[in-house]
Image 1 (cartoon, one colour):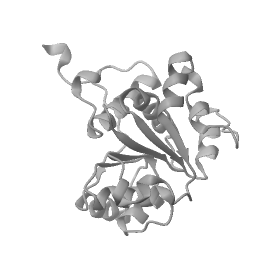
Image 2 (cartoon, rainbow, N blue to C red):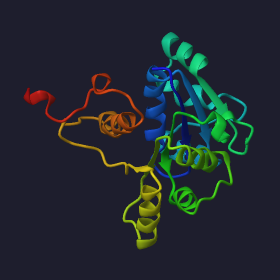
Image 3 (cartoon, helix red, strand yellow):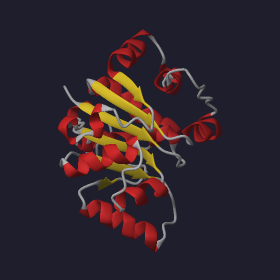
Image 4 (cartoon, rainbow, N blue to C red):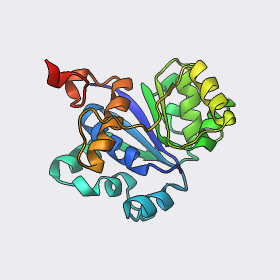
Length: 209
């Protein structure tokens, strides 16, 4: 699959979803732009016990639990990291838009900015470009309950063309571990990024055929 995608992690709970999406994405996409908001290291430390050290590649640190020669080769070849304020990134322009953008997890603050049409950093700019160029934008909020303001922002963004995909794991595959729960959400994200069904493992009814 010769596609360029952008994966952005923001400072919402659920860093594990972005981590696992990156893990799967390196196997399915040729080029991946990775962006982390400034608060992601705080969540990574608290939720994953993972210290993201400045000056070292964030992708390598996020993928450390699965690091081997194959992952190292894919990460080196396919992932490029961008500072959240780097508007010189190619996908910051509609003339070189990414094929898809996924914000996983997406904070309600970021979602509100997107719904308002703001493009004040590289994450919101990449998303704004995806919307205006009619490219897939998948937004994964993880918060409950949601207020009426949240719902209005979700509606506005959905009306603009985004896929709002809350981090709600399925249970029909009888998950036994946190990783299996996370995979249920990750595979739904991959589906909306264009990864074909045969490349995914959690699908309703497969055990009924």
